[in-house]
Length: 92
Image 1 (spheres, one colour):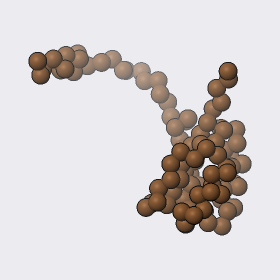
Image 2: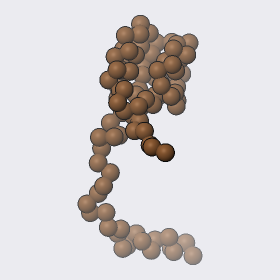
Image 3: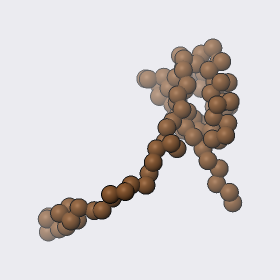
Image 4: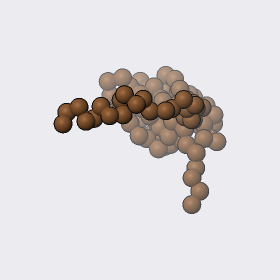
């Protein structure tokens, strides 16, 4: 089974009733009523195409891509601190 690379898109909209149209463009994870945004996951190769399609919708204010795939997650100096390593025994 091949793992497809996915990327998040944050879609800011005007009315909550438009979630149904936004849901058609990807996998809807979360929608905030108060702040009027939705978190949507799409395939990484389709990000630019989906952003253009979503920005053309009249009720969408803006679309922002998630930068998580571009952030480095391998750290060079990730040695655990020896003082913090045994702190969990303090309560015993």
